Image (cartoon, rainbow, N blue to C red):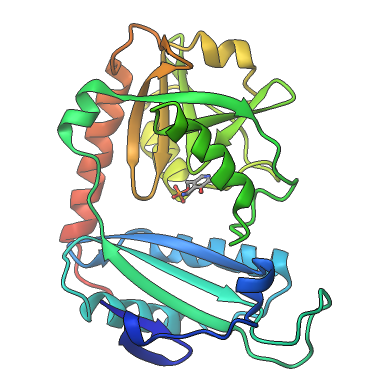
Length: 286
Ligand code: PMP
């Protein structure tokens, strides 16, 4: 696998970062994950915009203009064998003697790698997945895609320990998101999603789902969602760049709605797959 590190493409085994890197020492960095279908990056400009938001929040300078990111990402995709990929990129505040204060005048560490992307199969979409709930005990800047993910790692592990795939997070009795995804509900024939803010990551897939809902005249509501509404939803979905839209059919061991993927999921999944196909057939951006 070929990766990118600080200006060079090289085999991942040969890529090395100092133990003094602030990403290693403090988790002082930000990242993005970009799905790639048939070698076409999906919503690249939106991912780069969110990267800029995370960089601004972390007070890190962006070392590359959008055109340079496009070029580097396309070169990384072309240097690797898979047609569908998930590109991971991260920037840290660089290498310096350990001190919480920002080190002056050092370049960031820029790293990118890619893996094969295997979207969820039809079998999983027919059964849906299990999730558990937990109290969202993360910090109050969950809108930043920061590499310091210990809280998310611990929360996600609760799901793994329970034989489930995701942890649905509740803060002061209201839905925020999943440990590594955004969460949608269906109630009374409408899609319901929590509003963006500092308490959740502004998901790229979240935006796609809402756009597709609007284009197809599916009613949707963006508003605060109580724990009661989560537990009595007709349908519950998780969304993320690598898992697309997936129905959650069991929550804390109880069936969600009828306990199987609902009709609104089938509709949204069809729209999502059609949209993906359009992106794949589009002429490749330079
Ligand atoms: N929230 C969190 C905490 C995430 O880690 C992710 C992505 N893995 C998402 C939401 C979904 O974001 P996206 O649709 O951009 O992948």
